[in-house]
Length: 617
Image (cartoon, rainbow, N blue to C red; front, side, top):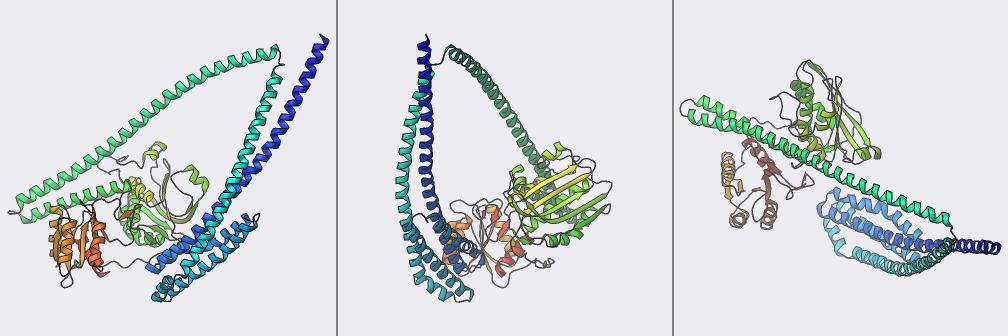
């Protein structure tokens, strides 16, 4: 019996020795595998730095060519960014290849060719800046820069090939280490199994207890999964109900407002038709009433597009202080004498990159809401400031990116809003005002416009204290544009001599209305019902000064029509119009920089001003 116990102790010691050796061997093999993996990561790092250097050179080359072609300094941004970061990237590449003399030599050679290529790019830019455009073009055609770039690409390709060879070798080494580690782990497992042979009845009892606990855990997990599935289904049903409720509220609000406006338009036109021959003054009053109803319908459509972030925006660099100052008199008249109006304008305010007209509309909407929240009077304050939204704020508000913004806020001392109202404040057609006192689209329009512009909106409110709505609009890194003086609109701008306009519109009634309006303004007008007919007329007509085209048409959109027309007449000026556009002339919610656009519906005054603006540009 004693000998059995001694044998068991000896066997136990031997088993523990085997286990210790297995653990030590595992640690050694694991460290060896880590070193192999480190070399693999090192190879990937070098390849990444090679890709970065090539990207910097290509960015610099793209920016230089864009600047030479367009003479627009905005195209220098990728050139300046690429050349600024290139030296650091190459130094990083040299540091990463310091362990490999052959690769280090290639990195040094790449540095020399990259610097020569950047120097060659700068020659073309300087020639353009001096106005020597032909010299710049000849410098490109000489092919020196291309040769330098081709050599740089060859060096990068050779370094990539060498790194790929090293990667394959190091990956194989890592795989061998992994196999050794796996084998050693299997040996360790065998040692553990040998040690487990000496576990007594207590171990079996513990195993049975563990098995019973596992079975219980399986049952509990099954119940939790079942409960989670039921909860997810219930939450999905609630979300669907909320979604359908929101859609119902939206469609109901649209139908209600449009029916009211159509009732005004149809009823007024019907009365005007009956009174036209009997009482011209009353007929004209009915027509004016119909126009007002139609304009309200157009405003509703514009607000819905703003909420859905589908309106075409034309952002420019503006001085928000100047904009608020220019609106002060209008806002004072809007809010009335019972509300004290004041502005707090920050010194050294950054330029903002935003559609100025839409920002003015947003401020008017917010001031009207503030006025309605103070029926007995109060104080309304518009404030501007420079703001930086940090990563912590962006993490709490995942719809905004961290960065620098120009903040414009509207603060009132009115009723304030409880949390449940703030939560729904931006929903379309949601309003706490009495029936007939608002459409419920003001805040949703502001929200959609600011979000489409890349900004952020935040409401701070406390019942009985007041409300602050803060608009964070993107900062422009540059100088704000100075707005031109408003033109005198007493008389509509008309044609200058024999100016010819070609109208392209697939809707016959809209087309004829545009033709009549342009002829009323003194233009010689031709019209086509589609792009194919328009291109035939452009080829046949002796003179076409302006192409006035719809954007959305069968077979070919307006942008493609304009591009085809300019192949025939390179100097042809183009004015686009549409009631809704998504891709042809608008990208990321912004009008393309070279686009002149007149949204539908438009008045003859708006048409006259826009046509004259495009022709005189």
